[in-house]
Length: 196
Length: 196
Image 1 (tube, rainbow over the protein chains, first blue to last red):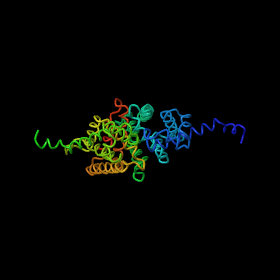
Image 2 (tube, chains in turn cyan, red):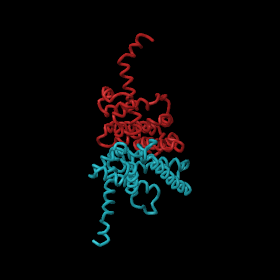
Image 3 (cartoon, chains in turn brown, purple):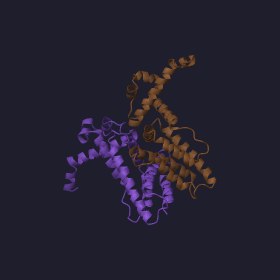
Image 4 (cartoon, rainbow over the protein chains, first blue to last red):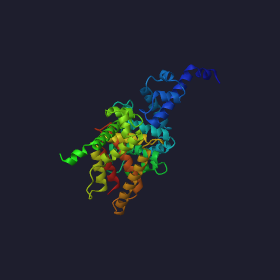
């Protein structure tokens, strides 16, 4: 162990570890009971610390939700794709990787539905995320159209919203019936209908 | 007022009204805060009655959830369709009617995601409902295929799961951005890709 790595395990590293541990427990509780259904007290108990100690790291449940969503983006990103992968292959590959993280998928499903209410602290996150995903996919689909690879009559904006909606909806069905539903195959079937 | 209608407003009618009122308040609270996020005490307070009085009608929150889901089916069913309507027109017309009931759509989105956890009392309801919807749509689509009206290569089971998933997913996007997203039009675009 070098001097530098020893220094890294000082108070700062310990605090970062503790913070990470709280986020992991919050993530697990939000995924199973929803945001409104989990209390800071329960999260503290799950992390084996006092409520006061938890509040030293996160002053409110809203702060903690923002950290959980950031963690979600970190975990959900997956490894970078090789540049030569097509748009459709990229989506199907990501859907296949998602099969390894059902807890994360459940968290996302619960929070995205729960956060639609006006006073939910996650509302802006999901509003922005849907806008961003639709814009990104619509851009990719418009490029395919310009390359003559989109079936006639397919509108990039409508197809972009469809991919986002189908992906979320089919993952929820898969959570209920993992032996019946193949999310990646269902997405591939839609993509084959619109891309030549 | 006839003698019969006077009798109807006796203790039994009053109890049924009270029960309905509790279900309506529970419905509203579950839709905004989720099942785990709402307590029987809050629902009683919203209905203007004591917790003891509420428990006279519903012994547990699970009982109340079952009543709320039954109410959801009642309200969500809509008027019966004329028999000559096509499968696609039926779906698009129902999606258009859903625009008038955003609260119900939000309730359904929150509960269907929340109920995926193993110990949730709504789990069997949604598991059964997804199975039933997929089987119903797959049957309709198989009939269209047999009539030569399904595009080649479209599998009824995959398309059925896609319609259920897309419908739920696009309604959630619509709840976030009602001015940007047209759920009925998005469904129609998919149906036009698979039905000739």
